[in-house]
Length: 141
Image (cartoon, rainbow, N blue to C red; front, side):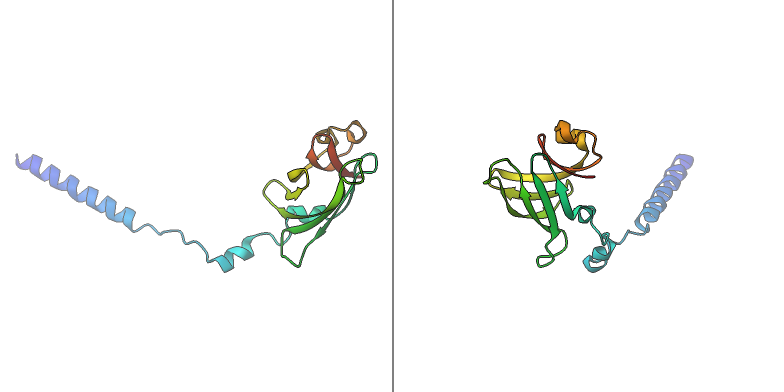
């Protein structure tokens, strides 16, 4: 009986020590927002898209930064359809998927892709493209 009591006491002490050791683990600190902001890359991947892009049959896209609003904001000037009404200038914002913007045909996202992703045979061999939807893409040489 004494051996059982001694064994149970020893186990209780060991488990208490183990819990105390877990409680003393260092807790990872999250840096304040001001420090986290400096951890984000200075150049966003979408910043590399700034400039002119060419589609087919006169379709085109020009992307410029909108520094008046802030980092990750863009102005997209585009001819996105064959009709004269299918053109305009739209404000865009960088997202995880690309640049999101809204035009008369609804919300859109401009994504990186290649010529095949555009769905257009005239751009199929291109490697550096931006795609809105299959059938609408813009590439650089």
